[in-house]
Length: 341
Image (cartoon, rainbow, N blue to C red; front, top):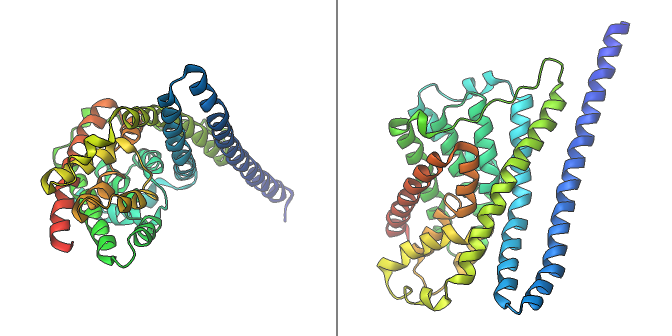
């Protein structure tokens, strides 16, 4: 082995070591942030409520903290996957895996969502990274919707939440995948470039290593999306303490009103897709189709997800895409529920 090859080998090993150390550092910092949030919520939140003599403040703080703590780990997972795609995956890989025709690429990308065990917080930065790598927006958006809804973790959680009701798991898989594919096709057909602010590729310079690009991408995606996660969580907490439970009870007796009600409730509660099945199972007063709508809509349209989409792709996109997705998800839930449940 020549001295040059030896030096290059040592340099490559050093890059790998630095990458591992920096990744572990960000993971530790993320865990520390969660610990700080949980500590502040448990200590400072009740103290503030007592000082102000307003129990709703404690309730708001509890809901807000729960949503943030629930979403941050998956947001960190999505940032890691996004940074890894941008730094280590060549652009030609996606051109080989996905057909050039968007009509064919959309269902393949939608089915590929089964491989990412994360929630909607993780799907937004990953979809943005895919677009930066040259993937057609229609295919990336299909992946964005399907990944948090049909991955194995979600399906196993659904089967546990609904024991002996295997058709509920099948219905969730079919309805969610149908929404992702239909929305991808709709965007390919009717979407306009001016509605979507494509994420710009991060320039790292000729002297920056792949490990440096990975760390820079991880820091950018996590900090950028984290702010919008906090904003959406605050909106969800506000709804939880302002809408009386008695108002929700009025709708349980009507099949026509129960389905759109739970579809709207999924938007504002912002329950993580790995946990929403247990929430749906607890809503025993509602019909199976209504509970299916809650589980189909939640991973695709909620307040924190809309905030993340607005920050990543632009407000014009988030408003249009989320509105149409909600309607398609509602229709898909009703049709699949009528067919299987």
